[in-house]
Image (cartoon, rainbow, N blue to C red; front, top):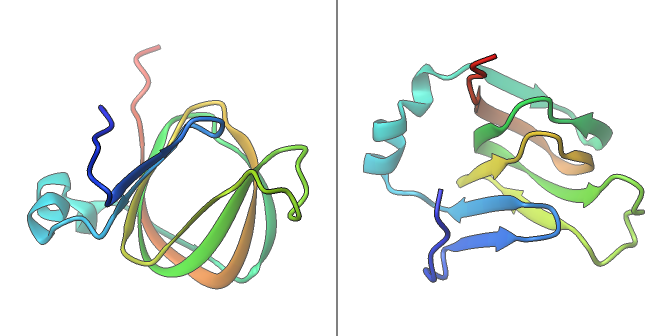
Length: 113
């Protein structure tokens, strides 16, 4: 996925997370978001490792993502929330600091191994 200069899209190089804010209904329909599984979690801190690339669409919630090994006081983080379409790369180890309970649709990239 190529990054663009559109101010609604952001790429965070150190974390390699891409956030597309408020994608159009047409874009969501094209991706068939509503057919993807759903996942949610309560506010809290979660240590995650992504074994496959994930694309997710947040229906509700707010989260700050920090690289593993950084504290929540670090300035190196990505924040996203309800209405954002997010791409997370394979192999990323991180901490999710969830401030508002998450409800999201998600899809893992298929592996051809």
